[in-house]
Image (cartoon, rainbow, N blue to C red; front, side):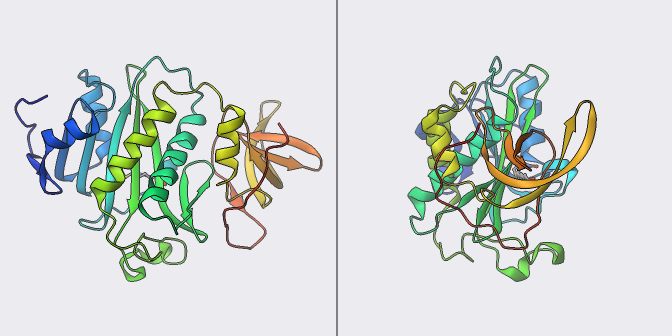
Length: 284
Ligand code: BTN
């Protein structure tokens, strides 16, 4: 697909023409920008104007990069991969499941590029390494029911590059010893893994996918606090995380009863840093 470049879009990215990346990745359109407010916002506009599934938007920097829950996502130029891609509408995947599957795609992509890293997935949308956040996923629905999948992965930051409140809990690939990983390498592997997991999106995790997610679930066995709706009321629960259910809900054992957490976020309350655990399917 060729055609005129959108206002402010670059004709080259990572040493190649954007059309060449689109051809290599087998996607309908790649829009690369030096700066955007947010790749998710730009892709949402494209989607509302009829963009096709797997349209990709990247930005070297974002001035209003967004995280979940209205948090700001620090997106400085040259430091990381800030990108979004579009999943088609008509999917019946539960909203909790898509970020988990993209998380799995992201860890699989990183496994291929940096085999020693072994990143984990922290429900609902974080990529972690050694208890620190390496990346995050923000999925947003469009007017037409498609899903904008935003992925941010820290590549080149040193600890001094993070805002003060992030210094204790953020990481980059370089900090984790993976140098020379390119943004284009990650997008190539991420799109490959995402296609096999999300095109079409699964409605539920089957046993094989459950196992794959649970092998990377850094919360498993940890004590967590979360807010859940019980009988129409929002209640704070504290219990042991025991896995991720078929629809992507976090399963928390509260005094022997399994509660399913589908919204919000969780806080680890046992004071240890999170690490990926090898675990076996069980529970719900
Ligand atoms: C989170 O951890 O809360 C999600 C962070 C998602 C950040 C990415 S960067 C590319 C895309 N554009 C955004 O504004 N956010 C996502």
